[in-house]
Image (cartoon, rainbow, N blue to C red; front, top):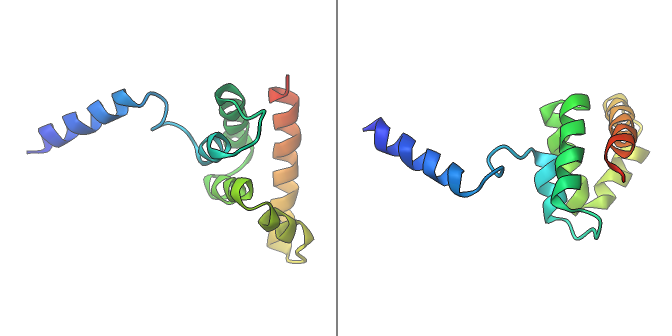
Length: 102
């Protein structure tokens, strides 16, 4: 009973190469309307995010692509948690710029 379901899942993953492995930053980047956001760039940014942010932080940062005002709210926040996240987010951005910008 489990074997056909498993085979179906594997078949679906094979039809969409890379989609199942894409992280939240890569997915958000690919969906964005930014002119320089090609697949290679988005994949590179996601790889840097995986090295510098927790999975939860990656999901939070991915929301910034669709809602830049949310980033501004976090940046202006006075809570310690938001300030710590923003520090790590800036470090991620700097690392992504060094690694991914051509």
